[in-house]
Length: 215
Length: 215
DNA sequence: ATTGTTATTGACCACCCTGGTCGACAGCGT
DNA sequence: ACGCTGTCGACCAGGGTGGTCAATAACAAT
Image (cartoon, chains in turn yellow, green, brown, purple):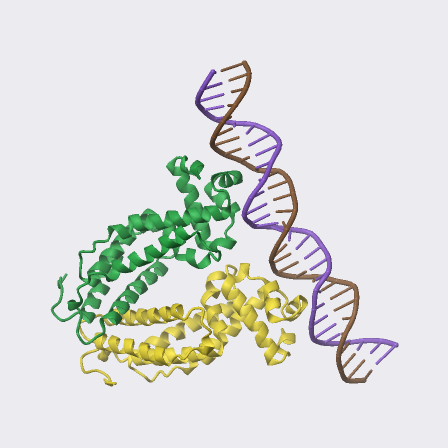
């Protein structure tokens, strides 16, 4: 592992990317170290020179990914914004930026707790649990409840808004499936996204709340 | 295949269930015929006596599942209900009932277009396309647009409502993960679901629309 | 009882892929 | 010339793959 960290950044990243993709796509058991080394462009021996086993590699990736997400995503969320929807808007932007920096980490994290049937070392489990907690806090802490209409349960409104945003993101992903991400101009999609957010405000906030920008 | 259809219902179902589960869980390539026969409680030879190859089996399942969904789900939707949300409510109930009859079919269909890399015979592709079309019609055809508030784009409202419902269903599935489905009393969850639907009506319909049942 | 037909099994096949090892060797500083 | 570190990929035993087939069981017809 110290051996691995001594490599130049570029090679490290190539191996990391190859491994993250492989595990994200196939889960732990069915992930193939052969495919990883081929994709990474290194000899089989080197993988086991850097990491002493497949499992060792997996745990390294887990910790790496958790750290990445905390540093490049969670820690950049502005918690002083008290408007729930504005906060989610901001969160989406920051997440998008982090994903642009490294898509594989997010894909990997999406599947890693589900496909690892064995027990991960406790310090990683702790990190994961902490991530889940701060992820929640990030969304719900210090929100101005007075913006919401009084005739709907605010907790339920929270959920409906989150599901809506998830729904849009999933649909967008499906719509853009197969296209080269780098070549896409995302601006119109952001515009569309904001339109949805405005509707959510109209629907779940009190009349007269927030900034009505008539474009 | 004629051989297979000559079996007693019970045995047929056991084999179908085993195969549907296996393909749903592992996709086509990584699904194992060995596991299927073990799960179904038959000898290896019989599977290839009934179906001439793994692929043949897969295509049979695809057709079977599509027919099942059309018959037990789509054809039972009441298209005379013009209230969008009421229709989705009704649709959810019918879907739930169909799923109770055979969960595996739905799981299988969820993954089958994604994990079959080879080309399916055209008559199956046609059936699939037809299913997608009528599935859409089922949701959007003949809905009363006048119920919706005038200050939001109705198409967007449609989407938001669907995403919300999907969101609730996914969360419920996650919440109930690992429990024995047969032993669950679903009534309270339906109640909760209806509460969400009422909020959606309040949010996206004109004031004074629909039946306000104060429970 | 005999024959023929059909249903059923699981050992077996050749093949492929697995995580991991190890001897060979290259590059480089000394 | 020597030793050290990095690098490779052929190789290993083990296990899983879809599919086959000789053996037999079950049953029907004669």
